[in-house]
Length: 133
Image 1 (spheres, rainbow, N blue to C red):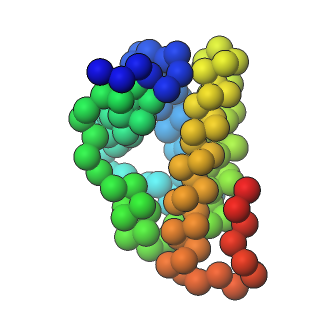
Image 2 (tube, one colour; image 1 turned 90 degrees about the vertical axis):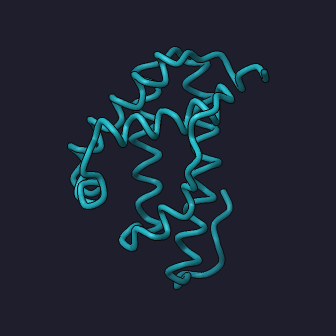
């Protein structure tokens, strides 16, 4: 078994995911987007927690395709990702100690860049070349 990417527990992942989606549901822009796609919040949170446990702790249990899901949604735009990441960072730094919050944030930003670029490709870029930062 591989060691985790960084020091984090399953419980910490679950707490971050619950706190983040509570904030998402209250968010004026992201809340309605998520509400159109998530009918069962506990099931969604459990699935996303499995995603992060696989990405961070290398645990089996998640077999989805985030790129495909985000592209198929149809109403997710590149501009949603900075909002998502800012809210995720805020949650990480509120719930976790500084070191794992910073490490998880870096991983989330790397994943978010890829998802944003996929969404930009799907909807066509109208404002120039991709932003790779």
